[in-house]
Structure formats: structure tokens, C-alpha cells
Image (tube, rainbow, N blue to C red):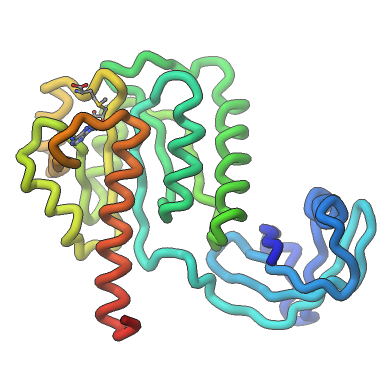
Length: 251
Ligand code: SAM
């Protein structure tokens, strides 16, 4: 079922209708939808509306709300990925895969060894990243469009990570069994920090430890920066979602 994100101000629950934005109306026609079709509209805050198309033209559309429900594919916890800026277009892959895996927010970080610097075209870059986020969110039935923030410096990232209920820094020299910490996270506000191609410096890891950000191993092999975030998110999300399901007796 086609999925569209519409801002809350376009959703008129009391009248039971949603007035589509111009872009989405246009996208509806591109997808060859017609009156009577059933589609899903998300408010971007985790609510899905099952809707029927009432009126459709190239530049506007009106749909009626059939039912409203909490988006089932949103995790019950929030993981923020702090990703050291990678080279070339790896960030686009990282964004797409992290969103499929349930990430809540992605914060690009400039560390000692990051080669890339997004200087003058930050806004253009972030707009592109948000487009990738929206496309990935639609494809995997997310209830939100995860936010990709502007890059922050290492010390700012540490400060933000330290405020999370549970924060981890992926470090290839951490003890192998430290990885188990990613499988037993009780907290629901989680931060995971991934280094760049050149890795974190010893001082950076030391600063993480002093800020109570736990170094964790992702296994015996050296993962590429674009693989490490995916590995960490997969471990956290799957173990938490299964434990949630077991607790609720869904399994
Ligand atoms: N120091 C690495 C090397 O010797 O090639 C370079 C860093 S690695 C390519 C990029 C990032 O992925 C690291 O900074 C770390 O955050 C994460 N990473 C890669 N392999 C890992 C592992 N086995 N355990 C934990 N983190 C890992």
C-alpha cells in the first residue's frame, strides 16, 4: 500500500479528511492512483491513517480517513547513530540502511580522522540526506522520517551521547565480550558512536570512557565504517525487539 507523509496541519481528524500537499498530490498521479484507492498517510510522529482517495488531480488531492492507528513498525525505543563523516557517498548508504533498521536520528560527526569536511554546502547536503531518509522511511513502512542533523564536532557529540540513558562507542580494540552489552540494553534512549575510516584516536576513546560512553566490540574483524553502524544497529534492534516481543507474549 502506497505510503505518504503529510504534515499534521494537513490532517483534519474532526472532518475525517486529509488535504494533500502539492508534491504528494503529484506523486499520487505519478503512481497512477485514482479515486477510491486505499493508501496510508503518516503524520510523521508515529501515527498511520488508512485513507481512501476522494478527489485527485495533478496538483491536489483529498483523502478521507478510514481508520487511525499507531505505526507498528516504529521501534519502542530511540537509537541515535553518531556517525563519523565517511568518505565519498557512503553516508547515503549508511542513512538508507540505518533507517531500514529503525534508527531514530543520525548525527554526522567530525572527528580527528575524518577526511571529509562538509563546509559551504551543508544545507544542500542535509536536504539531500533528508530526501534519502524520506524515501527509505516510505519504503520500509516507518512512521517517522528520521532526522539527519548538521555535522557536529567530536566534543559536542560526546556531550550529547553522555546525556543518553545508554551510550556506546564501537571500538575495534575493545574486549570481544564487551559486544554483549549491545544485546542487553534496558534503556530506551540509546546512542551509538561509529568512527571514520581511520578510526578513533586513543585520546578520543579515552574521552568517551571518561564520559561513561562504553567501548563495545562488534566482533573479531575490522568492519568498514559503513558496515559498523549497520552491525551495531542490527544487534541492538533485534535483541531489544525480540525481548519486547517475548515480554508481551507475542512470540
Ligand atoms: N582502526 C580501524 C582499522 O584498523 O582499520 C579503522 C576503523 S574502522 C574502518 C571504522 C570504524 O568502525 C571504527 O572506528 C569503529 O567505530 C568501527 N569498527 C570497525 N570494526 C569494529 C569492530 N570489530 N568492533 C568495534 N567497532 C568496529
